[in-house]
Length: 231
Image (cartoon, rainbow, N blue to C red; front, side, top):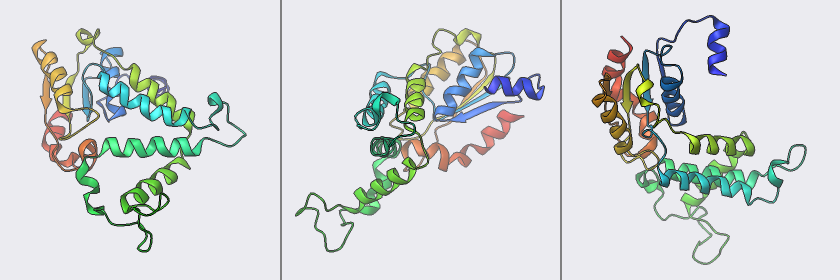
């Protein structure tokens, strides 16, 4: 679809292609699928040449929440009750995996409701539980379960390990400190491999307390490298 848009606009090539998280997978795939069309590729909070076994397992868990919702019905829920609870739990899991533990420390062990002790009732919640419930429910209302599952499968299927020799682009890797989804060591390994093959490669770890999301919130840390990469 992105390639079709490029052709529709009559563009001979992109000046640069970049993306964060799943967008980084797409950027890296552009580098191997259309090497003559992308002179610069920026991969922000990205994996290596393929997803790790641990990532595949994390993604499976996200999808299982939806598949275990009785309303999913094998994906045939349109015009019926959608699997909102399963999607809600999947999105809660994404939130927890994407952030470092420090992100929720502010909640401590406080109760969601002052009069409801979580230690005395299974229905009473801690503040951090309420936060996750609220975020998951809100996001589920504007998302689609099958779309989420296809994103999971696409991320699991990402693998450019056999096509690295095709890459011609100037590469910039910006992993995030404490990233549990795409640890910096993975993109560092890919960067080192490409550099050894003679590619122009730059690399910087984005630091902060938010794990994977450091790559979004603290992207300005790499502003000098990004400007140099865009020149």
